[in-house]
Length: 151
Image (cartoon, rainbow, N blue to C red; front, side, top):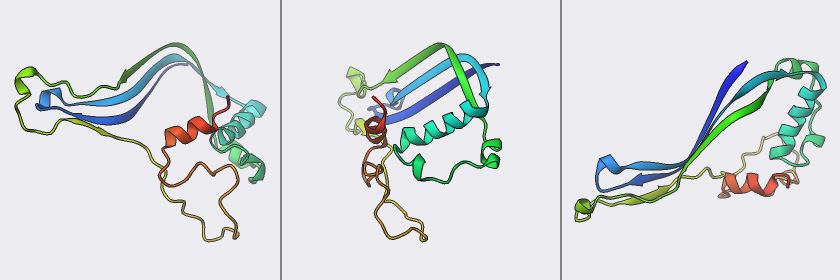
């Protein structure tokens, strides 16, 4: 079936000396293509790959997927036929006549930051799972994901 997938990521709030020139810094993409269900062994492989993409080495220590897990989950593949990306990563753009206005202008960065781990009370007494060391409080998710991404 034909589909359109869009994603946007907010990177900053941009404030100028007039409301008209306020903006946002962002990264976005719009992809058009054909979607299809992924089934059987390819579906199971995709589910394992998703876990490994974010948490390398973790999949091997987890309970294997049950038949019910697999039945309850849909995996959709998409053949991208066309895509468009847009990025805004600039500061405020004030008009020359607004420069005497005393209002604060600039960019307030926005980031997705890892919080403190909240262990399950039933965890055995050992440190966080090997391979999750980068997921520490204060780390930026973009940087963690980039560091664990396969090269």
